Image (cartoon, rainbow, N blue to C red):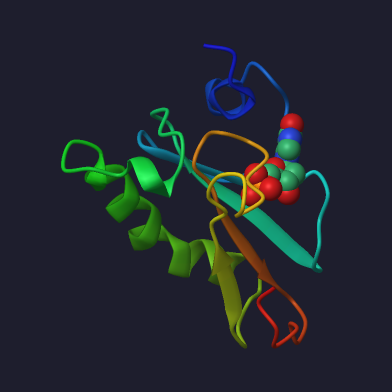
Length: 112
Ligand code: DGP
């Protein structure tokens, strides 16, 4: 499968990783939209949050289990935002589920 985030998870494409374990990887977004902009992905290919099911839900739990320490290590002591875009209307450009972690400044109140 030609998936850029599978390749990042496998180390076949370089990225600035800030955390990884056997189930998930967190790395810096190539085009940051905030002073801190990280992406957290499952190693297993899940196309979007719309594809979460009983078989892959443990990967999602692992992501949310680790986000607090990933955010703290990035210096996000005053809050942050987690976003996952889904499909065309959600403006998802990479079809491997990922959670954006945005922070390091007061974020806009509007969500869209
Ligand atoms: P989304 O629009 O939700 O699918 O966001 C995809 C994000 O992925 C976007 O903010 C840019 C980032 N991105 C795309 N390609 C790469 C890459 O090769 N490396 C890194 N670090 N980030 C990437």
